[in-house]
Length: 169
Image 1 (cartoon, rainbow, N blue to C red):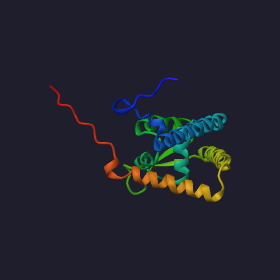
Image 2 (image 1 turned 90 degrees about the horizontal axis):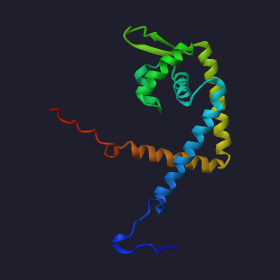
Image 3 (image 1 turned 45 degrees about the vertical axis):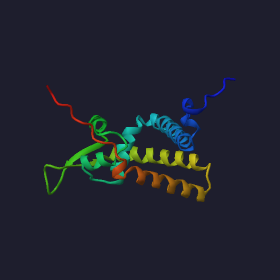
Image 4 (image 1 turned 30 degrees about the vertical axis):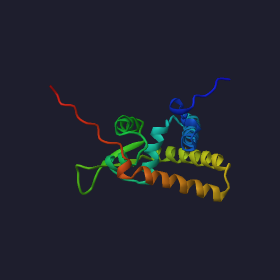
């Protein structure tokens, strides 16, 4: 076995740090959940980003495209490609707002609503299977921890700085 360097040349491996090590576990769990969701949704012809859009529309019927973009887990550019795809499949419709014709509201078609409810049932079943590892109190505690981390990360001083624009010659 090779001896570890000491003093100034010592390297503190990040995976030995509790915060880093625990965050890696969170990332790996997220990967496993995404993989399981993809497998569950494949027979429905849905990808996880499609489901994200559909689930938000079923939860917030009539939301605008901008409101949807603010709620999504996928990026805006990804949404601008996925939404027309869902429209072509007859799952989503953009309807003119009754008071402001410039605004388009998103709704699910009858087919879209039925497919989304199937996908929601699969998602709920996956979450139930996954959370069987915790009792009810631990489940609440995990949720509390994750909400605290989310709130902390949303603090303005933790936001990534805007990239500086380079002067054009």
